[in-house]
Amino acid sequence: ETGVTQSPTHLIKTRGQQVTLRCSSQSGHNTVSWYQQALGQGPQFIFQYYREEENGRGNFPPRFSGLQFPNYSSELNVNALELDDSALYLCASSYNPGTGVTGELFFGEGSRLTVL
Amino acid sequence: AQSVTQPDIHITVSEGASLELRCNYSYGATPYLFWYVQSPGQGLQLLLKYFSGDTLVQGIKGFEAEFKRSQSSFNLRKPSVHWSDAAEYFCAVGGRGSQGNLIFGKGTKLSVKP
Image (cartoon, rainbow over all chains, first blue to last red):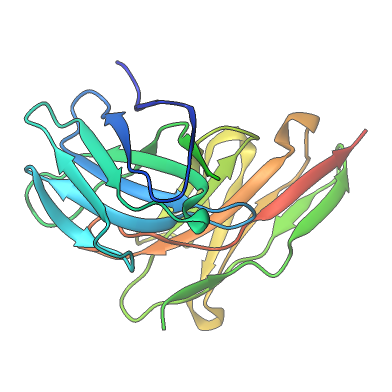
């Protein structure tokens, strides 16, 4: 059983650029959640994807967008990068049996984004 | 407002000593409560969770936590700390149908003295 994997592990961008982060969910999981963890802070919920659709969103602007693919992997896209977007981006996968209850979240090791 | 408060930013304990990390929450519905641990440069690992039932829950690595509804608390404990427990600990709250939206505290960094 493979766990949650994220790529890239580290990247550096400049203000105004766009970035795509990728996440492969754990085997048997059908739901992916994305979190932003700024330095010295706890993770903050960005959004969740289930059945290839956004299924819940936190307080993040529309320039944060995502995709989920038929194999349940996911991408997080951030446009028009700002300095405050520098953070560790965590992906978590889980299994939703279709009852509206999301199961336990399993986190990847994250992608650390630095915006200069 | 929904929130999680971890009052202690940094705690240092001696190896072999007992540990208690505090967590208070504010949540409008029946809470699901979690403790996660994060080692430097790593993702989050679930230590334990509370959904319902027995208010004292056991987790991995010898950790336990007690849910006290009247105090809106979910404190994490370990009777004897090992050097490998040094890490950052996060308390989180969610609810049924919260769609993976967990609200995390700011974390407590644990240092262990030899």
